[in-house]
Length: 99
Image (cartoon, rainbow, N blue to C red):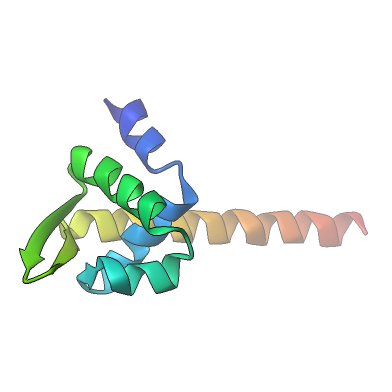
């Protein structure tokens, strides 16, 4: 299950969606401008995230608004960002020492 969970996170558009939803709930049209993919592709990625239980959707009139299912998803993204920042800083340090 854990491997499938991380596989779900293995797509840049899905990560971007989750990052946007970490800030606040978004409609599909709001996300389209920020994600930079076609509507059909965004719909597909949102569907994957819904099946994985990471986002929920609610209809508001003609639009659909998406939200994270839990704040722990936002926490996971923040931890991943911190880890990657440390890795990149470490790589830069190694490059500086070898120069």
